[in-house]
Amino acid sequence: MVKRKKEIVLGVTGSIAAYKACDIVNRLREHDYSVTVVMTEEAKYFISPLTLQSLSNNKVVTDMFTLPDNYDPLHTALAEKADLILLAPATANIIGKIAGGICDDILSCVVLASKAPVLIAPAMNDKMYMHKAVQENIKKLGSWGYKFIGPQKGRLVCGYKGIGHISDTESIVKAVRKVLK
Image (cartoon, rainbow, N blue to C red):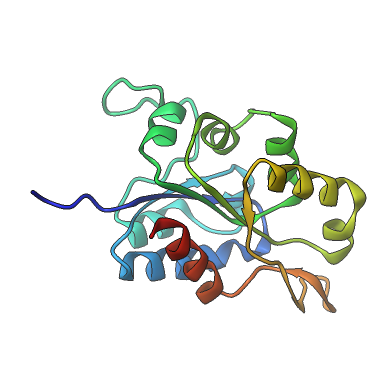
């Protein structure tokens, strides 16, 4: 009997930290995970779906209304096959959508349709991260069993250091491996 690879759905959102998804995909594949990348429209401004498809060896999903190869509602098919959903980088926007039950893109639909564990690696400006609304959303998702990896203090796109820098790749991969043991 052939052992099935664990399936990770990697959600990439519209953050400058989207470039880190390349390294995350590579590291996850080194640990023999299958990775399917789901990108928001905003993420495509920062990184190409072709790049992530080349690294993952899987079709990258960017649109809920793309016709699948075989009929299967795409968001539920992805949700069901996922052993884990990893949102890296996760913006305040996607955190708020999920906490509010809003499903207006393929990524939010996959997350809300899945029973798989969800790991979230936030990446945003420190003022956004510390805003009461974001902190409430993080607390709410934590109470539902969602796990957070970071963020850490580091250089932000605005040029100064603060909390909101995406966690390093090794910490993210370590958290994934811990959940999938």
